[in-house]
Image (cartoon, rainbow, N blue to C red; front, side, top):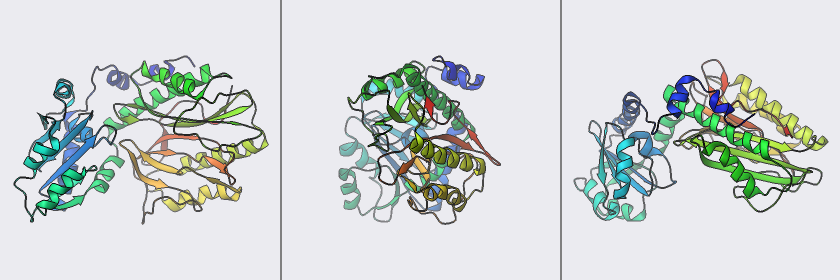
Length: 397
């Protein structure tokens, strides 16, 4: 496929969003989110909620205000009142003005979030007060809370639940992210050749989506000789290792559109799979297919475990989580297999409008060989739907 194929295949509404200079959600979408948070404030009898973020530490600030945190940001929320957003750098305010919603007051943090802004936020609180916190407050903030004996409740789990169920607008943004991610792996496949290093592979992948408005979350690569493997998973950092015609390359690629991501996992090579890798891929692809076919509103974890037991039946295992929620962080549910458990959930069932990554990345028990197969899917009432269009299964060049 030529570069641009997946973007050009988007529906007209998605193309319109992608073509917007600075895309924002509707005010009704932000009101929906703030209403969810207001319910949490009421249910937990909170006096207020504080959100703290530094660059790369999350996207809760964006979720409620529209601002994508650059250096540091602090948010002060009292139910029924406008949100106060404090942005650290004065020269970032002009762009913040373009992105924030009408529910938010934008205020310069004066580069004194800890020394001046936060003391003002908690000034009228005392030992009878309770605040909810989203994000990892620095120690200097915690000291101030302790001095006033203010009760603090970590409400991240409540926020996680809000993010787990996507609105129609969010699904649209993630369709765009999926297409951008497809452009990345497609560009890699179109230009992959022996002699390229992992660094160059990452550059090629990014050049596939950057021109269309995508940004990097994950470009993970693993290179190993197919007939004498010594690596079962892609690594989180690229190296100067180069590929040969006898190698198999495992990939995990995720591009985002304004912090809403896609994700594809594929194995790529220059020759036909040998018997070991054929078996690994046969098991992984079958497990993916069978999970995909039963995923819908109401599917249980036990049903997933029953299907994934084929991995252990084949004397294989996995290193990655089998399924995880996505879009706004690494979300619930995070599910492993019976022999490789992940998080524990009581009576959990999948719900309509969850977006999850299915990734049965099967490996040998000696950790020397493994494959990558999977992608982001959208759970609907009676089925799951692919978010990606890129070719599934092993990619032979």
